[in-house]
Image 1 (cartoon, rainbow, N blue to C red):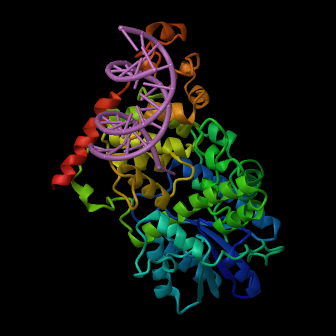
Image 2: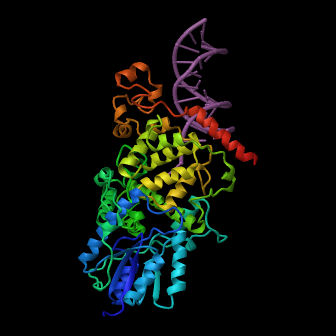
Image 3: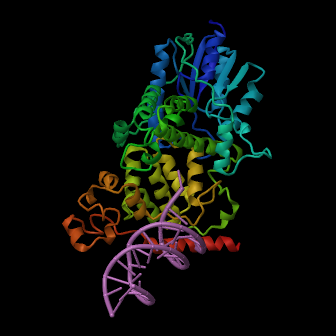
Length: 480
DNA sequence: TGAAATGTTGGGGCG
DNA sequence: ACGCCCCAACATTTC
């Protein structure tokens, strides 16, 4: 029997570098058991969706290979997290359990139960590392949580800069051979019949190495033009860090340092870097919000919206999910999502706005769809984003800000590159018509080979009508 | 991290 | 030459 080991409990922090629990486990000198629990008993409906499961499979495979390269071994088990940990602690006589703090409310409850039930038996150590700042550190003058983003972010920037990331360990103590785990394949995370993941494989490289490569490329190529480039869905101007950050293949602290490192280059890079770090700020804001208000994915943050007159329209919702609304920017976005597991942020706002305001479908339905189809699906960001769009969130877009999907397309993709990539049936339309095929004259449509209602749908609703209807729905809230 | 409606201004065509 | 009108361009307000 080997000496008592330390269990390193992996959740959404699937990396070796900048990993405080891992560093501490190495420093302890004890045998190491890196553990991942596939827990489908998590309360609530928020288990990984189909796209997330695909990513998780590959991220775990990458982590297992990286650990093996350092002489360790990833142990995979499945079931209720508390039971699995309790069983493993008993089996291997563990002396310690180390992990990163999670801000997901259900996980936070689980962490408290661990202390209560196992705290006497072994050393439980919880580390910071999922966020740049902990919720307790960012408070208003009155000691409250911020409800508005800009003062929140200013307060974050006044705090001491995040410390330098920790290096990855060079070698790990071997995992006791008597500790057994499941084969990754037995979790059945990958889609089978049909295998719809071809577009995902083409687009992504899950795992820590892929994450680091993405960060380096982004800092070298896109940061300088980020302030404007991030808004153009037809160009590769965004970081695409979201799934890597969600699974913790890279830490926000590593991102912070990489951006700060190149910012001094010139004024444009400084500006782009600030704009990008601000996006990290929204991630922080959403996580803090969810941590302090666990109902965020279920209930409107602004209680006035409890009585909002949503419509029950399964047919419209289905058309939206399939990219068949008749508005090219909306449809291109929904098809990009379906094909790649990701959608450009500008287009997320427009598609979400269309569902909630043009169709008056409850934001929770859109949230569910994104949850299932996004590789970066994240409880805090997804809920925060949808509530922001719906107008019922913290620091939300005022309800009466209604995106015009035609103007948004013309403004942010003036040459129609994005539309043509995802809507090949429209590719012969002119730049002028491509975001409003329903307004094109019959000769132009015929010349482009398009029969409206046959090759491409008629608009699901007319914009001006939908806009007035949404504003009318807002009126009903004022009266209550 | 809007858009539409409404208001204002100023240049140029033209009687 | 002058004033009127038109309207594009821009600014402000409203939803």
